[in-house]
Length: 176
Ligand code: GDP
Image 1 (cartoon, rainbow, N blue to C red):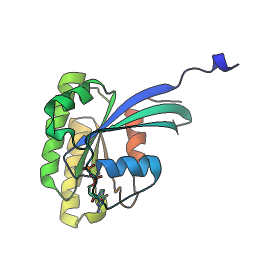
Image 2: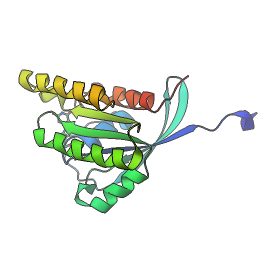
Image 3: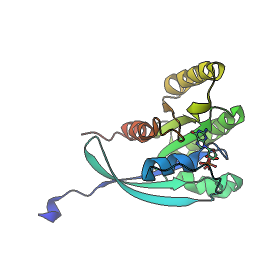
Image 4: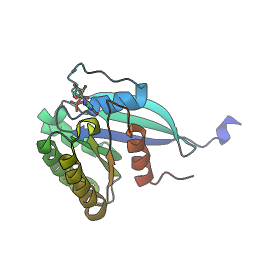
């Protein structure tokens, strides 16, 4: 009977990172299979999605914090209220990785070192050889020193976008 169905696992995921790195694009590609080059300024937006991963039905609440970097108090609240973290930077914007470092420190301070977290290097489609070798060094640091997930993705080309959420949920110990 219906009452024997266990409740769905429910994760509150937040997407954070500097302006313009592609946070809204990643979410929109993941949830709605769409990409737009039109720039729409998001302050904060919630999306709820039922999602099956590794055969397990989940409910994901995805918080897109795009514009909230301007509001430190909001950022603090987003961190407190979330279970799992996607920190995004853009491969064509070195400065945006510094924001990842700052956010990561804030999150680890509040949530502990074992917090489920994935760093996304977005705009893979724009990358040149030199930037790519830098990205591999960054990957090593993130996965070996920080022990977080790392995914290179392109929201524009829909490459590796689903992988971001798979890696994140694996970090959150979602298993068969
Ligand atoms: P947000 O401010 O972090 O939410 O960034 P947006 O999702 O609004 O994207 C900022 C700009 O970058 C927009 O013009 C997007 O079309 C563009 N963009 C997002 N992802 C990619 C990508 O993977 N590759 C390229 N070339 N452009 C992207």
